[in-house]
Every structure is written in structure tokens, then in C-alpha cells.
Image (cartoon, rainbow, N blue to C red; front, side, top):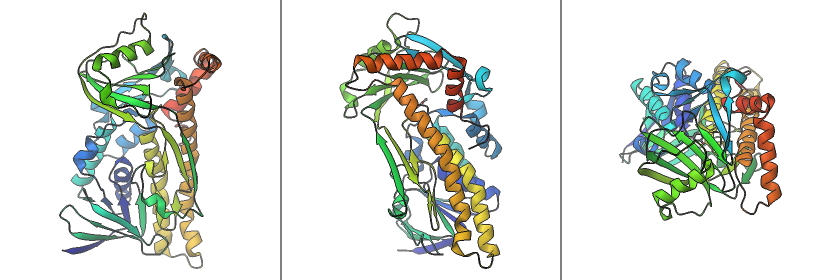
Length: 409
Ligand code: DHB
């Protein structure tokens, strides 16, 4: 078995959007990184995730000069529709906050980033096995793993980024004595489908009703993405295509003017719901980014956008950290050295909590809880009317949904 070791500035565990975006932006600053990923490139590309990018996320993709196809293949959405028992209200993002979002699926973001990183000769090991991070509490952290040819490899680095997703093993390297885990669960899940039919409506529709939530999204002119609220134990194979469409139509209203476009269902999955935050996002020579540090429920599609805002906050602080390390400011010690990493954690978490609030709040507003009494659902309708019936309420929704770009926090 061959043994190979490489030395880089930053070792990254996780080749999803958070890890790859970090690798690319570090490279733009002359900082070199290597990425290790447990899954294959194809496996990640085939995992369906959300499709809405905030204005700031699009800006990062465009400004990072990676030839992203977001502006040519994505679609600008200048508003969205909220519906309650068939009554609809449009939230006009452009009018309310002067920003849009873009429909551009996360798989395509991933493909853009993976293509750019490999085209630029960036080191990446797909399908790695036995991935382990060592020495985050020392000055010589490293990652060991078996590559796809089963050769044993080591990446030695100054710093490790844990971007290894919601089931992160890097996160566990932050000792429980210094880490607070914030967590909440929800009594429902989403049933997600892809179906071969043209878009039902020009914009996304988020709908609540007496039979719960549904979301009508899109992928392209031929494929739609839809979700509806279900029990977390649902077996997706138990529903026929017609039952699924009939149910979603019921959520949208039977007698309104939105008639669901139906077609063969080509993918179906049940998506779990949870909210989680790890605080702080750093310990010693480890920093967490993206889902590894926090998970949101899917309502509002904040997951990928938060991964990007983490990276936006992280990259300059890594540059500062490495600058201090190499300048070896005398007398500063480990505390001064790691200060930029703690600053990253604080900056990123401020935004994470705003997104946690929005995802939680929008989830509550748009779902029906099993066991809800008449008061609970009627009150929710009152909340819906208070939000959609006032410019201030609509502006709040629009500001959260499009991503608070004002101060980038
Ligand atoms: C999509 C998913 C979401 O969770 C959301 O809020 C909007 C769109 C999607 O997959 O298209």
C-alpha cells in the first residue's frame, strides 16, 4: 500500500458547495488547499437539494470568476406567491427590497464549483475512505484517508475546514465542554418529487391549508420540483402519482385558478426536518462551515446560502490567521493567533441565527402541526394575513427570503 503525504495551507474535509467554494476563494488569495470527500463526484451531483439562491450567493458565484452558468441557465425570480386555503398573495421582492432570488439548483452550483476547482488544478480526492482528522488542538493538524485506489494518504495543513455536511464528524472534534449544541425537531417532514411537466406557475408557490403545506417549485421548462408536508415515517413508495397530485391540488385549492401541471414522477424522497447550530464554529486549528456547523429546515431554502455566507466570512479570517502565523507576532501566543477564527464564528453565527429564525418561523407559518386544534390553525391564518396584508409584513418576508444583503451579516 503506497503512503503519500502532501502539505498545504488548508485541508478541507468535504467537497460539497461549502468546501469547494472555500477552496476556490482561498486560492484567489494565494492560499492553497486540498479537499477530501467521502462520496463520488457523481453521487453528490445526483443528490437533489434546494434550488433558490439569494442575490448575495449569485454575486459570490459571479465574482469568483469560475464561469458559473447561473446567469445563463438560472432564472431570476422577482417575487414569490404565498397561499392559504387557496387564497394567494404575491410577495414582490423587487418592489419591496430591490433584490431578486435565482432559481438554480444546488447540483448545478456543485458542478460549477467542482469543474472550476479541477480545471484550475486544485487537489481533490473523491470517494475517500477512513477519513480522519488529527491534531486540531496542536500546531500540526492533518487529515488521513484512503483514496479511491485504496492508497493511504495524509494531508498536512495549518488549518482544517470541516465542511462535511449535516452528519459532520469534524464537528465532534470540538469538545463538548466548549461546544453548545442548539437543536429543535419538527413533527413532520417533506415529501419531495421531481416530475416531468412544465411549470405550473411562473413563480414558486408556498401554500398552507387545512391539509398542510405544499411548495410548487421548478427545475426547468420540462421538470418541476414539488414538496408537501408528510409524516416523517412516510414510505414514499406507498403513494401513487395520482394520489400525490390530488393531495397537492387540495393544498392549492380545488376551485382556484392554479391547476397543477401533472406528469410522470421521476424521483421521490422524504426529507427530514431539523434545526441545529453548533457554537462556536471553531476549536484550535479546526473551523466548521456550512451544514457541518448548522442545519435549517428546508422552508425558504437557506442551507446552501448559509454555506456561502459562512465562506464569505471565513476566507478573509483565514488569510488573517495565516498572516499572523507567518508573521509570528511575538508574544501573541495561540490566543491572538486564533482570534480571527473566533471572529469568523461570531460573524457567521449572527447570520446563521437570522436564517434559523426565518426558516423556523416560515415553517411554522406554512405548516399544520399534527394535533393542532381549531384555534392554532385559525391563529396561523391571522398571522398569514398580518404578513401578507401589509407592506411592512411583506417587506419582512422579502428581506429574509432574499437574504439581508445590506450589511452582509
Ligand atoms: C426549493 C426548495 C426549497 O426548500 C425552497 O424553499 C424553495 C425551492 C427547490 O428545491 O426548488
